[in-house]
Length: 447
Ligand SMILES: Nc1ncnc2c1ncn2[C@@H]1O[C@H](COP(=O)(O)OP(=O)(O)O)[C@@H](O)[C@H]1O
Ligand SMILES: [Mg+2]
Image (cartoon, rainbow, N blue to C red; front, side, top):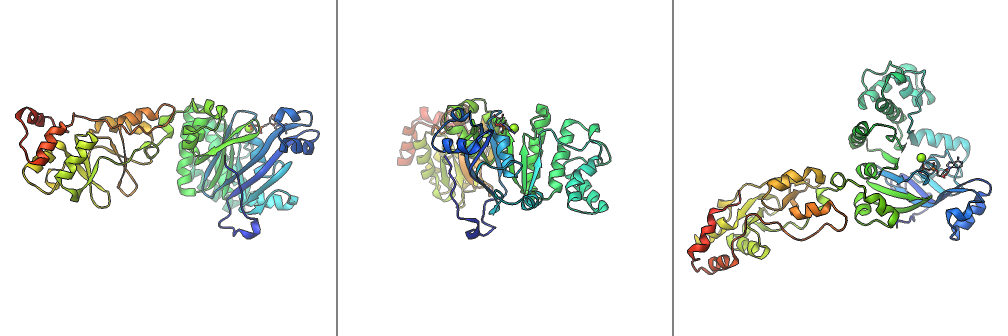
């Protein structure tokens, strides 16, 4: 469980402060909020304080880093909207603090709060909340209007942002002329027009049809690649949370029960509640090659020579190995059949017999995109990092195992075709001629 400790704002330069920090936040609606908080602090449960009020948020602490997409996920009624409304001051916290870039948002006066909200935090709502009698462009320009930006300038800016969200040319229409997905793009454009570092999105895609919704999720990630905002995104859908979130906070009955990366949540759910959610996750769309890959083996350095390669294959029970240069960049593969020929011919270099590298994938590719390459690769699938180095391999059995619950690394390696018998390899390494029956296997090759 993630708890938050950080120095007071005065000690932390703005650049290193988290974009948002919530510390021991409580929100109780009702008759006796403070009394409820005191009881909750000493261990009372939500239902124990029902007479005092509704404990919507109980002792929530987290930090959101600049540029991060932080998702808050939980069933309806778990307190997500109440948290996000405390982050932007729409709800006053019953106890605890919120800081924006190290500046207190809780406990400040009304005008300070208004300026923090206007300059630092923009919100996107589930039901778009567009002004129906204003044009699309005027809706997007609204935050600029509040800031006193002149009409020509703000409409020009609005049209620029509309183009960014794929709505070029729609500025003069009324919102009612647009589909739900397009209206939500206007909602996002309006939030972007506010030009804040932080975007708060409360179930922003939940009202949309599934296909439109997926498109919006992809578009949000695309925008984020260039805009690099800090985003707090609320959803009740774990698939959406996993797809969008750099980290996810899971809420249950007012409490944050786990904070982690999608992989943390998937592979190590904190309790039964989280586990229930996790069972419905589309792992193929969430886990990446980097999440499931194993140590890059078998692998030899190009300088190693055929004898070393052959020993590696014998020990790993593989019919081929990856050959890499000194920077671990793959040069190709060498098969046991070829290596044994080189050994018999007294060759010292592998390079003359290299076969091209089979299919490879990138560390960030999701599992869904690995199945075809995996089937086409005669070796455990090669995973390359951003610099083209061999970062790891994914045996087929590992790929399949990753789709089910539980740990993914099997350390088992797939083998196609059958490797040469080790006796034949040993004989070659010892310089004894192998018997004719065994050498017949040379007709089978890798590719
Ligand atoms: N303004 C309010 N007054 C009273 N109770 C509220 C108010 N807002 C939310 N609640 C209650 O707080 C709990 C959490 O609500 P909410 O934060 O909206 O959950 P979520 O967004 O996760 O669905 C619910 O029980 C809800 O009924
Ligand atoms: Mg809500």
